[in-house]
Length: 321
Ligand code: UT7
Image 1 (cartoon, helix red, strand yellow):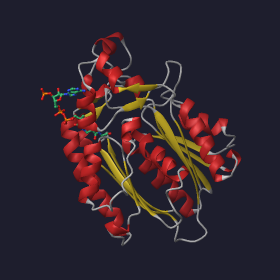
Image 2: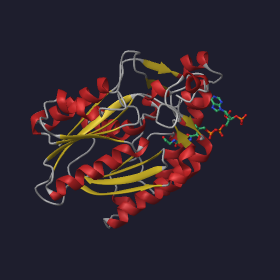
Image 3: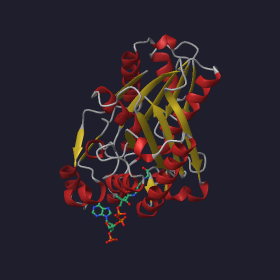
Image 4: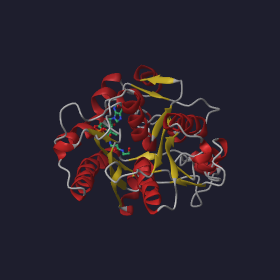
């Protein structure tokens, strides 16, 4: 029914990163496609972006927050461990009594949340769902580690969903997978019950996310292509029938490789990584909102979403707009 997004005002360019760590604009651009990213101010947290993104989605849907009966916020960088950031959103938009929970599936979080919301609408167990994907990864990034600090950005995107009158439009299907044996490829060791915050956690930099980028890269391309195929074939749609492919924005080279494998039509793979970097759970809903507000998606268009991230988790969603 509607989409919205909100990102921090502060733009951090590759040129600025050159002064912070041993890197170059050339390396970052060639290896990732990223030119700049948005970074939250010290006093800003996830809800500062998730809430305005949600409000804009409600406005574009033309409904009030009181009509929402389910709020899901996909994130791994919530305001606090608990209560869930989704309950802050629920309260501020006036969704009185709505179910509200956060969903932890890292970069795949928005696809997972979309699948769950769609199921609740289909069964009639919920009437109107607000699905937010948002991150403030800058707060768990080691700004001295060039392997990770050049990659990520902050922001949030949101969508409002309601059961369609007919079954031709809406979320046609979602496929969701995981492989926990590969959990050490991307993880945040500190701050949980295994390594609660302590001086030793800080001394060992366990409060910052770790990633084995190169190993992740190879699995990402294969998984994104396979799960996209799965959701397409389940709905008896061919690659050529995809009007927009919106992959998670982790790396321009991953996006291009998956787009080629899937034989997505020329110019139909949406890319905005150069402006935002990898915003994890926020990347797909931010992209969706840009396409929607720019009037590039038409009613009836087939939109394929696919994502991959820590867990490992991966998934794809198919929407008839
Ligand atoms: O969103 C969740 C899922 N995440 C992903 O899908 C991320 C997937 N991985 C990637 O996007 C890429 O693997 C990276 C962009 C993270 C890294 O690119 P790469 O081409 O795989 O580089 P690499 O890790 O193999 O490193 C190549 C070289 C290394 O130097 P040596 O050992 O060959 O001398 C790194 O130390 O590049 C070096 N390097 C850098 N150099 C300049 C790593 N980071 C930087 C940097 N600036 N920022």
